[in-house]
Image 1 (cartoon, rainbow, N blue to C red):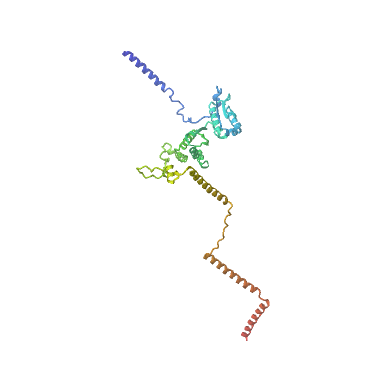
Image 2 (tube, rainbow, N blue to C red):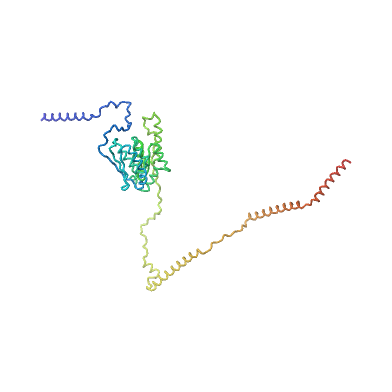
Amino acid sequence: MRNLEEDENGVEEEEFQKKEKRKGKHDKPKPWDDDPNIDHWKVEKFDPSWNEGGMLEVSSFSTLFPQYREKYLQEAWPTVKSALKQYGIACELNLVEGSMTVSTTRKTRDPYIIVKARDLIRLLSRSVSAPQAIKILDDEMQCDIIKISGLVRNKERFVKRRQHLVGPNSATLKALEILTGCYILVQGNTVAAMGSFKGLKQIRRIVEECMLNKMHPVYNIKVLMMKKELEKNPELAQENWDRFLPKFKKKNVKQKKFNSKQKKEYTPFPPPQQPSKIDIQLETGEYFLSNKRKSAKIWQEKREKQAEKTAENKRKREEAFIPPKEPVNLVDKSEDANNNVADITKSLKKKTEKLGKRKSEENLNAETYIMGSSEHASGKKSKKQRSSA
């Protein structure tokens, strides 16, 4: 028995050793791992000589587009077709079904270009312009279509939060595009973004935080601006930036609810019983009247109500024919008015006096004026003669 147990243990140890050997099979160091001349993050441009045989199977993708995009796609389809033809991709626009299809051909060499073509038709269906969407065919350009409709249930709240993302005059959207280096388009229930992987990751986080009401995009813009400034400093490249970044706390200010209903005072006794219809008739004496008199009374009340209603309607109709009251010029009998009148009379008197003087001067006779002047001169001469004598 012992021998059997030892043999079994030996077999298990050998199997375990074999498993351990296999575990590090592909983790061996490569000669190009530590080569400083090789940039491992660089995406090299595809060379058709790498795949001269082409594709073995036909791969195709199709997507639907909304009806309002039909006219634009019909106009822009030749440019899209010519752009895809360079990479050996066939494309088809079906206006009956409302779909776009891309597929590989015998001329296709790059195996990943079909995925890029699929992203292209997806962007076109989400209202991205054709010249912008064609840029996705570059190896360095990536795209992400973020669905935001399922994040908020209430329609009004969804529209308001989506507007926060766009901002006044698209200012918030432009700021995000500059800071992340990505193209962003908010259309309907989706947000289409194009750029690098790093920028797309930031945009997805900002969009989701905005739609879930976790953080306003303006605060995220402030954080991105701070990070951009910290990147310029080489001393802080290997340090944690949390101490420099602002921390925003969400504050829910609860509004006081004013109770319009006033609390009634508590009484252990129940409220008094309301009088019934028969009780009211007994009080008024109507209960003891005959059916004829009751009907006559009801008829009389009805007639009175009708008379009041007709009189009111007549009054309303006659209002249209009543002429409006003319404005009466009220004479101001105050002291200020009397003073003004007195000032006016004084000024008029002065003016008349001046006019009288002017007229008297004009009516002077020329002969009398000459005579008067000669007499005046002779008088002066006699004075001189007297002085000389």
